[in-house]
Structure formats: structure tokens, C-alpha cells
Image (cartoon, rainbow, N blue to C red; front, side):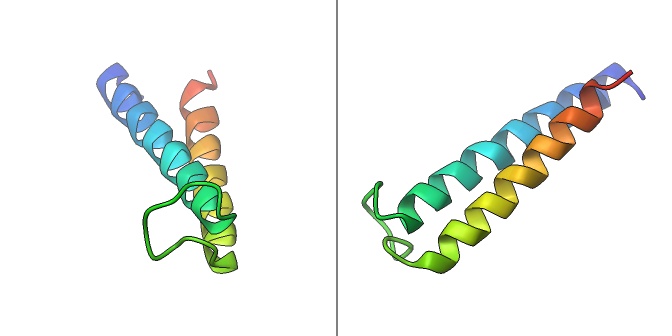
Length: 63
């Protein structure tokens, strides 16, 4: 895989993990601010998104 593509995929993976954690924390009512606050569905959505990001990051780092 090309190093430029790997770098782009790593950035996407980090953004997915970050957004997933933020969504989960909003679903847990820890982070204030949006319609997601206190909604258990966003805990699940955030966890799945963060796991997809972690999987993508792992995939791009393997040799």
C-alpha cells in the first residue's frame, strides 16, 4: 500500500475514533451540548464508530 494512502487512512481512523468517543461520552451524558446528550443509542453508535476507527488504524499499521 502506498505511504500516502496509509497516512490518509490513519488520519481517517483517528478521526473516526475521536468522533466515536465524543458520541459515546455525549450519550453517557458526560459531554454537554447536542441532541445526543443522554441518548443511549449514541453510546452504541459511538462505540461502534470508535471500534471501526481502531480496526482501520490497526489494519493500516500492520506489515
